[in-house]
Length: 595
Image 1 (cartoon, rainbow, N blue to C red):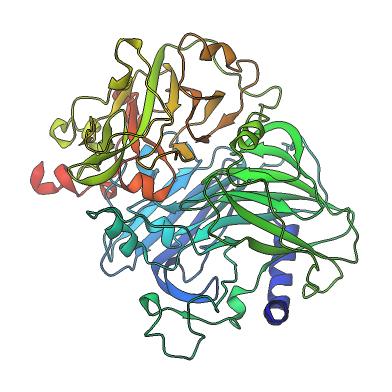
Image 2: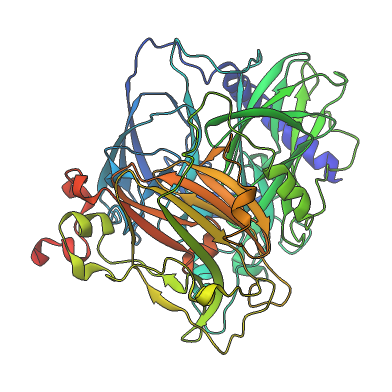
């Protein structure tokens, strides 16, 4: 019955998907001779959508979920005129992976680079996409990303430049996400409550906004009364909107898959049945190619992967996405690799593909260590001028469960920090920067990263201080993971740095040792990334150059972790901050009456 339902849904959607996906495979490249100004008019509002057969309210752009994909060429200027049609909440949009050199006020991080866009207001983002690659945009206020406010930003090379690899089948965008039936406002309330109520595991994993929830589990079918179901949701297994995503391929051709994750909580593993993947780029930067049969993708990471359709052409094949790093409570997300001219209704007769065991972290680290920069790219500085050690801990602060960075649990400033530095509004935020190293490291005595913290004693407090770097300074950051308040539990944390790429120097298990761990650093060809995973009970070391004047968030990209404080902010080149547009101001101490 389940396979019959899938066939029915695929048949209903086959014509539409075939046209859309073949167009995507043929497109994605631009033959323009010079950079252009690309203008978009967007309206953000609520939308009743059922991407997994369960209808719920999402936040969408121009009535689309996922939101529209932007295709641009390196050097283009994007001008996005965005109107907030949400009746009761503000918003902001972060352009993930785009460095915004010269325009830090359009980074889109609420209360850091701009005030939220109020209901009914229109805000215009304008910036240059300076590097080709697979990127994203998403909401950056509270947990709006988790309710569907996200999309892809694909930047191609201009004429005259070529990729260091070849393919003849075209580009296919593959956006991964996890999906909850519970509204983000309930999730936020639970995270902010005493006792703490975690968001739990997602109900489904979506591929390009498509999935199929098992309606027989706990939700009534469409058309029936839903009073007995959680949150009055309805599940309609015949809704064509929740047909599986289909990737049509021509036998013998090679395609570039632009894979990215918008997951709220989940680290995921991507796998195509019976096929080998060649990884050629990560976070928009070229790497030395390597082959895998499954690919770990952490929240907000992106990859260019080559896929050759070289299997039995009389069959179609499963595309599977599974959770990594958390005990499985979410079914495999499925799509179909369709070998043309087979019907997309020809379902594979095999079980859903599975990746590595969920808690095989050695496999995860081994794959992460395979990434090295393509020869000829920017090499990492051989030495550093400043070192930070950042300890991530889960704490109880005033009865609330919070995450902290070097014992500071981040809370937003009512005044955008960029404006506070520009206009010297020193009362807007804590003037004491966060510690350079965790207090637990006093006298060079290490702590036990495997030990469960005592919830009755905490060194953490709320704050919004800023790390300040000199322009051009080379900075090393070691991110040290620990056990949570739950015994024998440590989680994967994908950390993203706004406005920057950084070199990933190395990974290690246990506690970072300043005398010996640095000996394992890769200083020959470390990969450039903008998001890196910190594995359970371990550490990762990165190096960046503070060469982009602005105020930039650095945070865990697990949405519920960031919501309860797992982040910090870096400022650099403050004396060279550009003029700040008035549309980014108007909250906190930047209100006209406060000047």
